[in-house]
Image 1 (tube, each protein chain N blue to C red):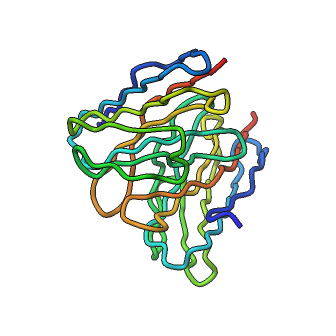
Image 2: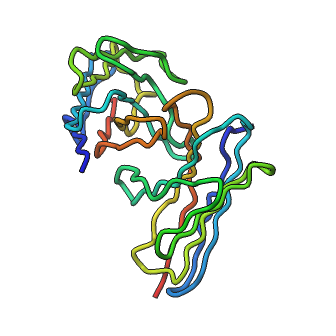
Length: 110
Length: 112
């Protein structure tokens, strides 16, 4: 079983739609959680950290459910520029050692 | 902004060649990492370093070595390149307990 699992997608949504991704992780001792965004042929970039209380950054909302060991990302009012692959990332084993999911691809169409 | 640079964007090498990939960061971060990224497998950690001259194996260190002589520079070495090392190589740096990492633009290595 993979340490971090994501639905690869693609998720095809029209502009303005709301879309949500989930991610599950296997190590209950995990401490830190992130969503990274990766554009085609580019490096991953930190989108947002995920806190136990949940957090919001503009159109993006991240939630953590420790009991069920999953993380979610909600994107409201999707833009064409949101088209990318979204990586779920967990600090699973030791300080600063991150485990990456394989990503969920989002395609936003006009 | 953190800036992480990698020596080459694209590299083509022959089987058996020794390959050096260099990474430089300008933000004085303690920790540096080398990953490779392959379709369907995601990012996998090759080696990382918490300090100068210090290195630790990641999940897939076989066939690779690293060098960190200065805080800002972390090199990945393929002692004898093989075709199964054809991949995208990404360097990252980070600092602090949160674990956030910042990536360089990547080097797409092809071994023929």
